[in-house]
Length: 216
Image 1 (cartoon, one colour):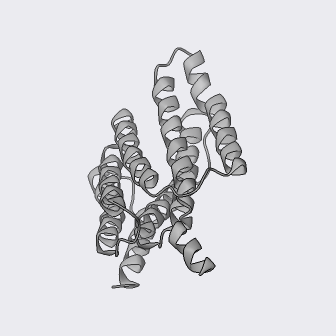
Image 2 (cartoon, rainbow, N blue to C red):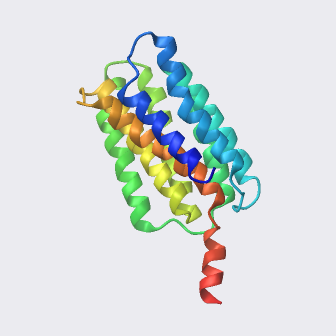
């Protein structure tokens, strides 16, 4: 089970990305949900070592994101549902936050947010497209998700959050700015990796405890 479930997650993700055809859409959606269902099972079976209700909140966030995967073909519905999923991740990461935000990380996240706003959201707003407001709100939420992940000091949560940001950035640029070759793989590989790492962060010893052991 220890290695079997991660292997199944990886295989099902690769099958979806590389093999499953775009039509029929119903089958495409079903295949897309399988890796997420397995990731939720993986999270549910991991021993919870992070503080408080971290495991429960992360698992709920994963489930909400799985719903978002199913409704993303209706873009606004998917965007709103993913935003809700990120709010659960933020709530979990805030409970586990044990470190101040490093200045360099804060500057880099801020620069990313400004760059994506200029590249994606502001052009939509300049055209009078109210979707720009929704995109800007989503960017702020995912930035907060990355910010709170960094403050946990949990490398799995941090890498998962950064990969999620990467996946969403590719998707946004491809949809609103210019087409990106190989978009599906560039979106879905970091996306599934992000969700898996966030799930795996449940069993990671809190950074503050690691520091205490190192000093002992």
